[in-house]
Image (cartoon, rainbow, N blue to C red; front, side, top):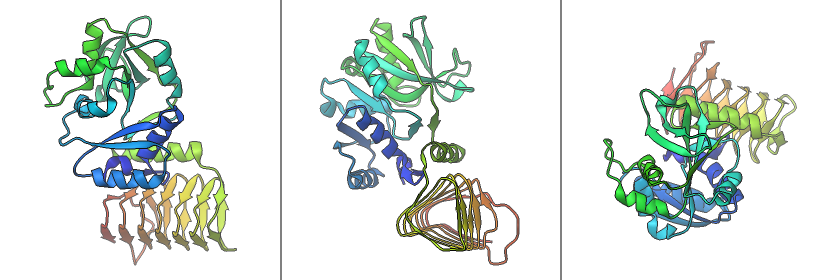
Length: 334
């Protein structure tokens, strides 16, 4: 599946991005999609009813972020625009950054965040007034600890800069090279530093951390499923309509999707249970379970991600903790 559609707190990552864009007052949205996963993205976003005017733009090959802007040129025309990477999560909206871009009459605004290991990211170097002096892509000796978050705001001049750059050693048109071209020409490239959290969700531990942070920040107690008298719901737990809890304990923050069944089980904090899951005689904590996962007889599952329709069963049962990451429709019999 497209990684932008992987759910965090039972909601695709891309939906948080689109909500931030809508909250900033932007209604015309172009979504750059690939041939491999574009149909999935189109179906999910169209069905979500997000009150946006959507245009889907196919990028035939993954040739870089600047190439994505190039293929979207007909859609963008000469309007200023926000480019927001669909697999990023930030803990606040972007309205204030859009307003800052307008008020400073900038040619580009890049969003930065202080990180402990900037070698993993694009890095920005600023002057004393917050203007960008230099951008570097994953430097081995970082000149600063300011990482590029993945939210950019551009005026139309970025198109000319993209037309002038060459592919990098990776064979891609790098957006950092295009922004550097603006800097070298003396254009107004400013920055804003993100105060809240930012998570790049490209890896297992990052996704689990994103799920933890979003559940902790946003989930409120809302019991819309059915809970029998032998069960105990503790704290901020969201039970979606149609889910059923029998002889079980759920301790929040946690979310359980519609039509899920929790029976003789324990669901611990920082767990997202997708729609139609079945958890029987099992204990799960700090996990992301996508739709229609089946757990049976698993005494301790933690720090794990299970794809859609995956099944993990342990008929014998013991107390050993399991940590698993498996894809869609996988079956693990222990």
